[in-house]
Image (cartoon, rainbow, N blue to C red; front, side, top):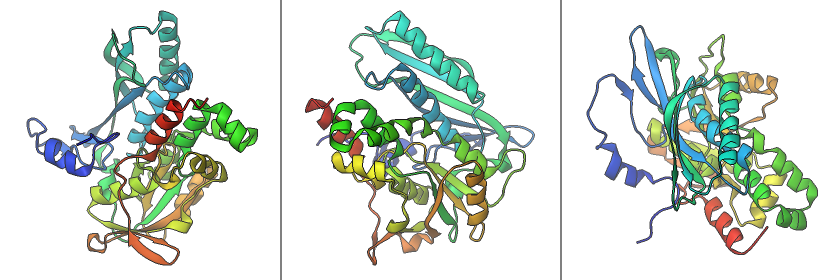
Length: 351
């Protein structure tokens, strides 16, 4: 039996991890759960500690600066789903033995810069060099923040009748990374303009600004009920995960999903369904019915595109997608198509 690539499936999570999480502590109000981006630990005086962890990236085909951006902002995207910015960071770096001192210095300076830009103090971690380490994953990190518990959003808070919003476009990060990794083939097959626009989208792969605009900073907006960032499995995978986290169903309308022309062309070239492909930078937001225009207006004031794509329903109704007049069960992707597409192109010698 082959191992599943990417994030583990819900069944594997429940079988191996869910009931085996060390000692039970009553102050842990939100622990490990499928489709939940953060943990929440109760603190005195009505406060709580929210934490999230993710792999750190080191992708030579992208570059050191771009890898550092992904390392910082993919963690920040998870924390953003609380409606708050991360405050503290721990980094564990297991770097290739061949990684030079100068490259390490450059990489870390960008980690420092991007953390400082969003207000994160790096408080510790571990750094080492490992023989035989050739992965594009250079270790892992944890971001945490302290906020009033009553104001912290989690994906399990979505309720039936809530409206589902999606910011930006489907497959935003996967298409950007593919363009930057295979520039010659993108330019040859799709043209220079598509290549340049896809590359230009790379620094839109942060959804922190999206979340803060939706939830509010000085003034907290109570119309937003939950958020979930888009990673492996794409926009539809993220909606499915949110329904599992919240114990609900959903009705999604395929024709409303925001797929840009650049994303569609690159996904077609690599035989990827953009709806199910890694889409860091997009945020799934649920809000109370009737308030969707207010939420969208706040995002549009920050020049962030936002689209209504469906609504949360009762669990018994299932997770459905309406396409061409036919309403069907929404499948959960067993593997993000990005990974297969990337390695097939790499092994084929695409440049």
